[in-house]
Amino acid sequence: MDNSIETRRDATLLLGLDGVQVDRVEVGDDGLRLVHVVTGDPAARGCPGCGVVADRSKGRVVTYPRDVTCGDGPVRLVWHKRRWVCREMVCSRGSFTEQIPQIPARARMTGRLRRAAGRDVADGARTIAQAARERGMSWPIANAAFTCYAGEVLPAEPEPTAVLGIDETRRGKADWRHDPETGKWVLVADCWHVGFVDAAGHAGLFGQVEGRTGEKVMAWLAAQAEAWKKQITHVAIDMCATFRSAIRAALPHARVVVDAFHLVQMANRKVGDLRRRLTFTQRGRRGKKGDPEWEIRGLLVRNRENLSRDQLDKIDRHLEWMGTRGRHIKAGWHAKELLRDLLRLTERHAGRPPTRLQISQARYRLQAWCADHAFLPELITLADNIDHWWDETEAYVLTGITNAASEGNNRLIKLEARNAFGFRNRTNQRLRSRCATTRQARRENRPG
Image (tube, rainbow, N blue to C red):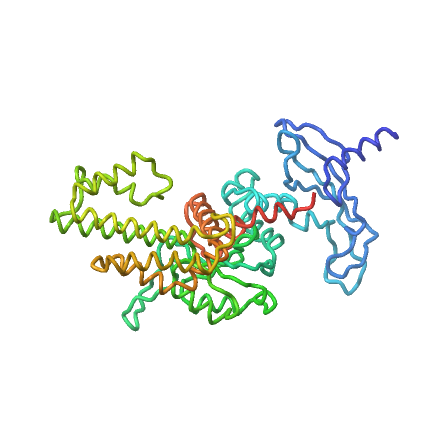
């Protein structure tokens, strides 16, 4: 007898389902393990209507709630529970069956099974369909389980950060609806989302707003706590004047930093525009295979220090074949490298903080080179853009802050959308995106 009690106690501990005790385990005709359990929580005798504890049983009921797998396969719970008579005269319920927090009344699956499905999506990088298929439930139930789990694990307020990153990402196509009264097409859902991320740590995505207007950015920032906004010292963005204006209005104390990648990208774009314009001027057509400047188009956008001696000689040789226009293309490439020399003054590249003299000299070299080639409109535009964004560019050189965290989050957001084969519900997409970008932070903060 004692051995039987000990065996049931061990089996109950192994099952680990609060509120029930294992009576016996057997194998069904279909080979599935049947775990017979009885109610072990005294509070299950309380009437759901009035809370009075019942003392008279009306009979027994057997239910089969689905539960998580145990070992190498699923198990089937067989819950032998009682139906009780409520003795409270004013209670509208004449009788009730036992229920526990893990298995509420009329529930067909345990609470931990739902939570496991939600955890599969939020922490396990699975889609709703995958979690539903693996856990043996329908898509709507798995989606509801994920929404509930995400509400538990995601922080209600943004984590403290000193550097905020802001960037936009595209989500499918815009949703337009025809207004029969005005006869015009009205934008119902924008195809862009603006994300706010922790650019200094690993907190991930703080939130997203639909649309990429300055009003949207200001509205999100205005909704945050004043104490949280005051600790932000820098905001990293790409070369978006709309974001810059919104940040200056909503966070006047924070310094805006432009991302170095987008500055170099702009310079490379100017070099490409210059090459295509001069090719069309000289040849009357677009570049094609066999043209010397077209053959080295990939080398022109690479970093000079990453090019071998042979590749540098190839650039010189091919551009010399073009004559004067080839030298103009090389002037554009040299302007791009002068900009990179300026950006490489950061402590991360140079090993020590830059001085104001070094920054001024590097800026002067770039401006002087563009001024000496004022007959090339692409270089004048490049110099004007640098002057227009100089405060933000100087902030990058002094701090080395980038918006790489935003770009990394955008990659995760797009990967999540591809795995789900797209989203029709924008609210669900924002929730899934936030879970995908905060997995690392939640894994690090998890106890144990």
